[in-house]
Length: 149
Image (cartoon, rainbow, N blue to C red; front, side, top):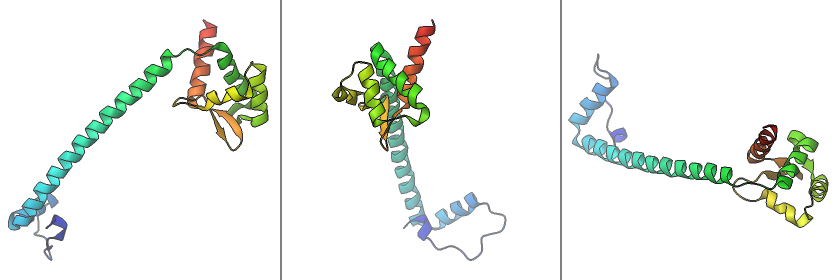
């Protein structure tokens, strides 16, 4: 029997807080004590699962940050991203303009697909337009900061 299934008295005793009322009800019903113990056990399992999931997530995020920072991109790759930003801004460029940008930087149309792959892809397609992702903006920022040194 769960705590919610226990009969509720018509009127609570005056002067008792919610905790005192719950404790009073649990003492008067042995099934309630069993239900509370089961709830506490389940809560402990959930807390341990959440801790494990948070630890795994932190490890994955640390790995992504580490792998993205170590990989150096060719300059022409970065110049393509800059061109997309300069010609399209936040709205990106149309598909044909994207192909022209790639050709100007020496990319074959078939080789442009690499800009859209991976967990940290610098570009994405939305409704026929090619836009920078957050990762792409970070690559550009890093490249431009390196040029200013």
